[in-house]
Amino acid sequence: MVSQSLRRGVFFRERGEGPWVLAHRGASALATENTLEAFRRAMADGADGVELDVQRCRTGEVVVFHDDDLARLAQRPERIDEMPLDGIRDVRLLRGGGIPTLAEAIDACGHVALVNIEIKYAGAFPGACHALVAGVADVVARADAGRRVIISSFSPGAVWLWRRIRPDVACGLLFERPQPFHRPWPLRTDMLLPLLHPLAVHPEQTLCTHARVAGWRARGYAVNVWTVDDPDRMKALAAMGVSGIITNDPAGARAALTLTPRSEGG
Image (cartoon, rainbow, N blue to C red; front, top):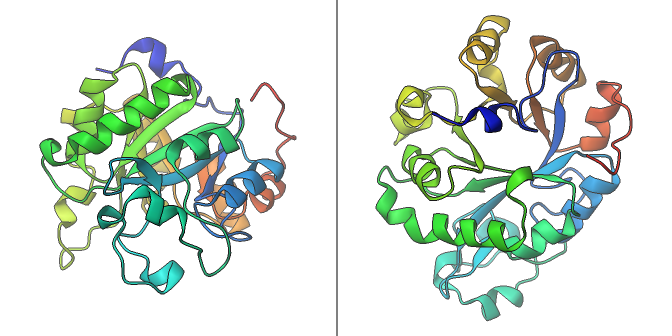
């Protein structure tokens, strides 16, 4: 089980405290997703932290990028895992900005920001993502950011492996609405929660009802929900008692939730 010190940690919000506002790929409504500019804009707009995506490039470094390839964001055919870091440094994205390393992204957010690191791995078996998980663990350790980082993944294998490599650093299982005709949908549900024992659940926002959120909280999980931009839905989720709201527009979220400005103490 996750230690009680982790369960009492920063990611578990009590009712009445209001949810954390985490900027989805940075302030991606206003800047290119997963770029240093998006992360800096998120913090300037009052986010409590950011959500970002990581994978390994060909030379082994952990870089921040969502897609497998550059087609959507740069109109280029290359895959991230087939490019060396030097080549990735040369990529200019269509909306501006480049592709940072995880270490650069953590640094850009400042020393108090929460950082939700999503491990991009679609497989079931932890062995195939060991290098990525270990690489993330090394970056987090070097940044001395373990107390303000939460690792997340749709892959139960990645969550299981993280629990064994860094049991002192929080993790959460991502899941979404069942999509039986889209493989591997069974791996993107919450069916393995009892075996994984993460600190948090990270459900798609459409899965959240008062009863479900209350049930997850009763089982000891923090509830961080994605991706929410509608002000009325944000208010409803906050009333349910979610711990964190992941949004493309952190400034809009803070305004909708009438949260006080984030302090330097987090």
